[in-house]
Length: 265
Length: 357
Image (cartoon, rainbow over all chains, first blue to last red; front, side):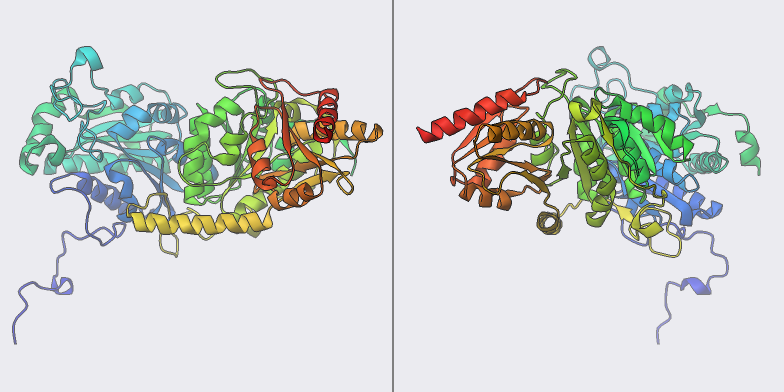
């Protein structure tokens, strides 16, 4: 008889890390080193903690997260490119008691979907937006995004983003925070354990704001794209810290009255 | 029930309300704006959802969301606005969620004008959005018919899990006629008050539902397309609608839909008064098209005149259905002009002379 080398879960007395119930058991289609998986996990942990899996409806974007619905064990719709906030609006208006969130990348949200995200925030639509900013188009293979940094080389800005031609990258958290309908808008990063913990708290606050009926909430997450940045997974995280955070400062950009009281509970 | 004097756009809106529509999303555009304005007042009164979207693009995607959530939902627009909805329409059909679009056509192309037109037959009946899809297209010729078709359209959309388009024109939308409204249904989401099993309502006590239109593996996408085509064939078998006038002994057949069909009917009456044995076929479902009935009629007539408010769009479907059984002539007015009965009568007379010569 051989002794199993890996103990089975039931035999462990103190499980400190396991798959959230809201995450499906399946292999990932995301590239190695990509932080989409971390973002998915954080959202799933928050859904579990708030006990809202049975009434949550997600809306996936067009982009790398197009198959987000494969990973979450909650009802999901797959929107047209950029239109997730409009689709989420339609869902929320007929099911106001459901928890509705979109999960969108920077091409989807900040380029083609600019009108939809802006007006959804302006209406104070009571939904939550998880916004993945990795400064590039991932799914189509590394083209310039509205969030691509000045001088950053992409397949459609091979000499680096020329701000004389393309202007400066868009700071969505700052832009949307300026709208009265926005209740909670924050930017976090996924480049370190400490920042991941802070990101989770922000995601939780965003969902809590929706549960309290306070209006539009969005968490922008600075994320890595090792494949299209041409960097290792480790160097990608360093790149977020050294290049993205200086242009996209982390912080809370809109905290409506009553939000802070929510997170203290 | 008594008849009331009703404006087309408002009558369509009230018919949808009485059919139990739970949510309306739209954007102002002439000549359909009264429909949106009516809903802006009526829907909140009944504690149902009304939202003026930031664009037609947003409006159709709000419809897509509400339809995915299992609600009875509709939007309305006019030609340029409907062009903006084409992306969403393709997604809606591909996701198999039911909803209703009212298209009150106006003169085009481009910004065109706000006068009645039928120039979007190709766009709605033949495609407009990307991919192999069909829409169930119903074309009313009177305010009463617009009411009746709108009232039924939600059940049809839900039966097949697809989009139904009420294809009207500025004339139908703007004119006032005596008409009777149907009884009020509660807004209960259709499906006998039960949310559809596929709808996004929260995965409580069931596996999670997904509404999507992406199938990356070509063979799987092909299988899905085959499923869609099978559904379209079923629709084609069951949902053909048309009206006929004086076709029993007709030697000359006029074919027109919506407003031009109505004008043509007056011309046919005038022709009969002159001793010309004319008849009218007015397709009501533009897709599926009443091609079999048209082919039957074509066997017994000496000539066919197609009348449209465009450069000859349904004309192509007539020629396909008639398939050489009878000569087919066309009379069209464009740019927002409406043919007068006298003009159509002249064309009927010309048809009889040309075919006799």
